[in-house]
Length: 115
Image (cartoon, rainbow, N blue to C red; front, side, top):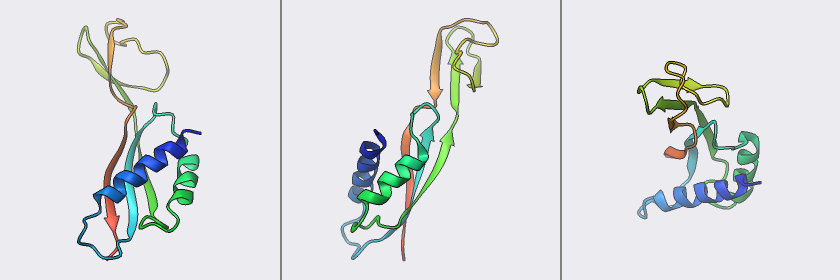
C-alpha cells in the first residue's frame, strides 16, 4: 500500500510548512489535488493519514481532496482534451504522439490552521 508513504510525505511537508513562531499549532485541514492517474485510493490515504498524524499538529485534520482529471495534448495538432479511457490517441488527428498535461499530480494546495 503506497498510500502510507504518500501520507508520510504529506505530513512531513505540512509540518515543515508550519511557521516556527506559532505556539501549539493545530492544522484543521490539508487541501490536496490528486490526479486520477496517481493511483491513490482516497479511503486508504485517509486511513493512513489518520494513523500517522496521532499526537502531531495534524491529528484530527481533514484531508480535502480535489480529483484532477487526465488532460492530454496532441503534439502534432495541439488539440487538448480530457481522457476518460486508457486510449490516448488524439480524437482530432488520430495521432498517438501525446503529452500528458495533468492527471498524475499529488499536490498540497493549502492547509488551514486553527485559530
